[in-house]
Length: 328
Ligand SMILES: C[S@@+](CC[C@H](N)C(=O)[O-])C[C@H]1O[C@@H](n2cnc3c(N)ncnc32)[C@H](O)[C@@H]1O
Ligand code: SF4
Image (cartoon, rainbow, N blue to C red; front, top):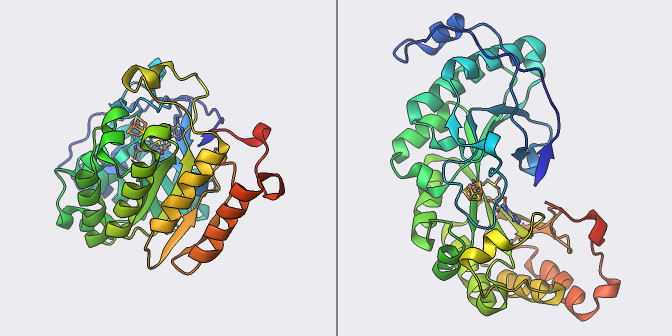
């Protein structure tokens, strides 16, 4: 996962409390510009490298997935940011970058946990202050949408939210339970279907190797079943990896073993073989992957499978990422 190492000056907003019942333009006028305050580490998808990263929350409201240590540092404890600060940051970005901002990524780990009215105020302010913005995106947990209707999501879409990144991780309920995701095939499917109905594009992440050797087959098959059932616009695979050690993960999944390189490739072969997608941009080019795959499914399925099979048969001749270049 890409990490923004940039530090910016901290200047908390001194705004008075502003009422949510005020129109957003009026609320905007109540806020003075305030430089965007990043609490490190900050993560964003690789495809948001050129986006303005706008924190609207800190940390992750769930923070219990045992494979994920992205928001476990004390300074990343979950909190929703004060609305006045966020609106002040938008005003500051407008002054500094103005129409040059084309894309905005709402950080942190699950910005869509904010109530719809808070998100609408943020999206409206972005629309008003940053007229060059064509796309706003964020991470999204299925549970973030439990209390949001399709009509509310459609309002968010109309206000600028065009894409969300959903960490499905697996379609297999046993694997999801072992890793503490707090979601299931059904809950993830429901969220992805709601997003589709609202016209919000979905980028779904699946973790290669998450079930270890014991669950590899069902992880591959059920993850493909989830993708087939929901037909996401984008699908990405990452290799599960533990830069800070496996202890936290093993606490909930004691019999887990990592898949070796061949095991990871075989799981990818099973996964791609089982995919029946009509028009999904597929990527396994994140830095955690050995094998980089890119294509559009279904039209590139045969080519992608051939590339995986080539890597299984003769890894020495496959275009693999060297170990030193791998990472989260
Ligand atoms: C910053 S997280 C935010 C995603 C969002 N909270 C969600 O769960 O949908 C983005 C993604 O990083 C990936 N990730 C987290 N921990 C990982 C690990 N140890 N190895 C590989 N990928 C990991 C997961 O796919 C996760 O969904
Ligand atoms: S994967 Fe997503 S939901 Fe799970 S702890 Fe990490 S950020 Fe939170």
